[in-house]
Length: 62
Figure 1 (cartoon, rainbow, N blue to C red):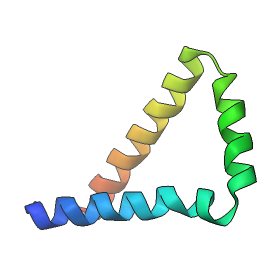
Figure 2 (cartoon, rainbow, N blue to C red):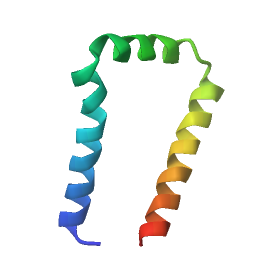
Figure 3 (cartoon, helix red, strand yellow):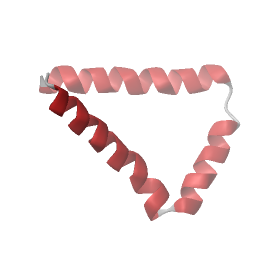
Figure 4 (cartoon, helix red, strand yellow):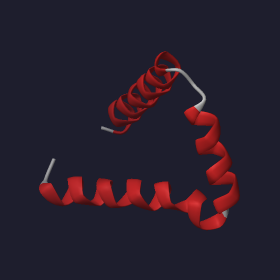
């Protein structure tokens, strides 16, 4: 993997992360208020799921 690929991947993540706050800021704010009510274990579970899905997609594409 080249450095250019890493920068492109980071740029794509930023684009996707910016879509919801740009398109629906009120929904984005409500979502974060709900996330703040979760306990640490629940947040870690969602983080782990995101990591596993990301690794799975990388393995599938690579």
